[in-house]
Length: 212
Image 1: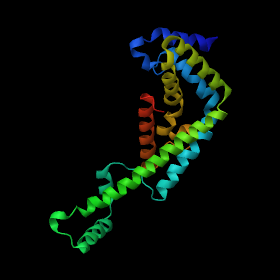
Image 2: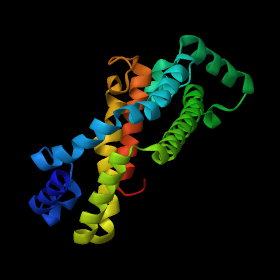
Image 3: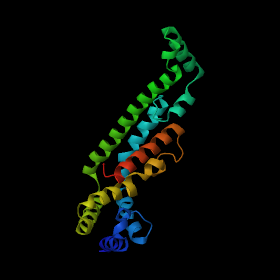
Image 4: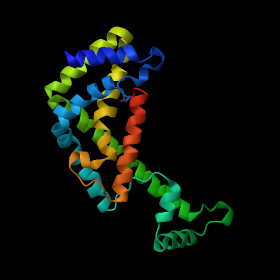
């Protein structure tokens, strides 16, 4: 079987010292193995991810923010918001030495809200993806089983890391940075684009650490 041969070739070509790179390179075996999910699972992937992306876009349009950089939050505060923060601080009558910069207090307040928004976005994404595994196309399931079996025979439980990386990095995460894959415009507003890119980065880091 061609797929099995490609998996065997990838396992043979990749040095054990760099086994983390299995099925992530651009060699023919890795590309061949990575092509099958796109061939048989693109519609499933669109059905799973597009509603998530549309929700992030809608949330940003409603004014919800996912920005985690305090300097960016500060720069986006309107003059009216800064003036209101200053006025609120003046009305408290605190001694100058006890005062905290009222603008930074506003920034920190917004930062905490944004962190909660990001947490909720990530939980929604992971829950949705894991729930969708039940309806994953049979072709992807069989390929995943074969990858796990072959990698486990050579590297034991490390096969789980490789399988997770393969499914996410090769198939599920690219649409977060290229929304046209799920049928949305290739260019979307900056706020949701940045939110989805940051979400991809966080999920990628978690996968590489084996925590997803």
